[in-house]
Image (tube, rainbow, N blue to C red; front, side):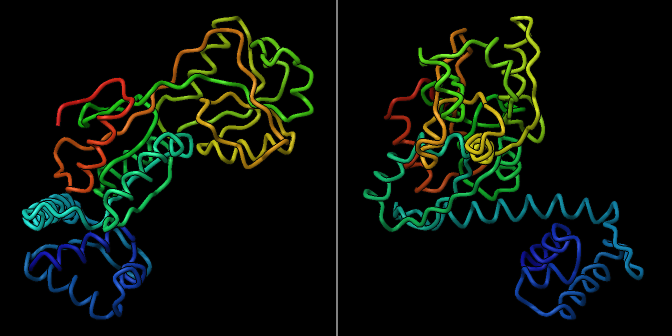
Length: 301
């Protein structure tokens, strides 16, 4: 059993089916099934219970999967570290970001590309919970997300704080000629809110602010993607309250941003990465650019 076989096994577990795993690995199903059987014979234990359509990872299988993921990550880090002894800034830089945060580092990414044109940048999207999963699965090097995060296993660079604003369909915004809206006025509209799939975030912050003013907002929809919420606001479904990160420009004159009269806490975007992972030269160079830029606080490397 070697690293390749461990990789095969991890893909089988993650895909939940031999057929899907074979497709992901770009190989035929029978050889992959045989590889799994060979591993079970070598270890003398059943890794995946299979009978007809029933398919279940055994306790031993989960133990092997956990160890295998750790070994594969360490091997990947070792290869990257040794391969970068010449200090070349090349390869792939994987970044996870929420739609609310992407606009905050577009200029830095453009400058990074000018400085290091040999680096291929790969960007994935999701809410904070999903981005944390990508970090723990070693699928991204860095994540740009909204704090807080659920544990202290990350290094963190806090970017400039962002204020909350209300976003309304333009014809509704015309009712507020002062360019601002009170929470009491906002409570009279149907409200569409961004909400993490797990944990506390924007949704809880907004609801708590209404409650502090003894108001009950009429929330009719929640969604983890702010871009989806803005699309719905542009149709007149309701209004939203989100961090002012410059989203929604594609909707032109269909939506308008208003300031909120009552003071709101500042939302804190941040770039985070795992303390126990090796950062590639490319990732370190981007981190250095962010540290040299307009940031509030930098965690030690």
